[in-house]
Image (cartoon, rainbow, N blue to C red; front, side, top):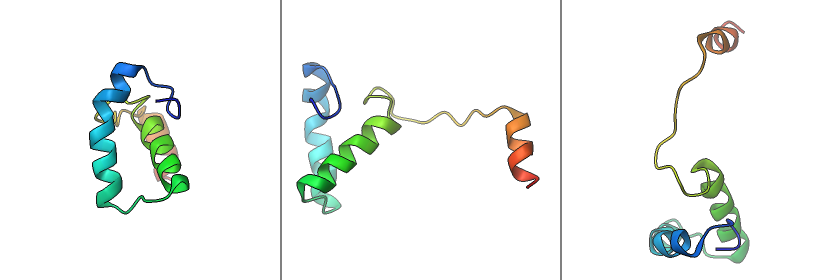
Length: 67
């Protein structure tokens, strides 16, 4: 809960799925678990999103693809 700055409700909701993923993928040290929670927390906007928006302004896409 504190590592990802989650409310008690969100921490309770995500505890079992996060721990199941950690076990499945051998995230089995405090350092690995900390990094995993930090990354998942970042990518999910604080455990509030389940999918990532792929919206990118076309100008940015063009700039990257033409390099």
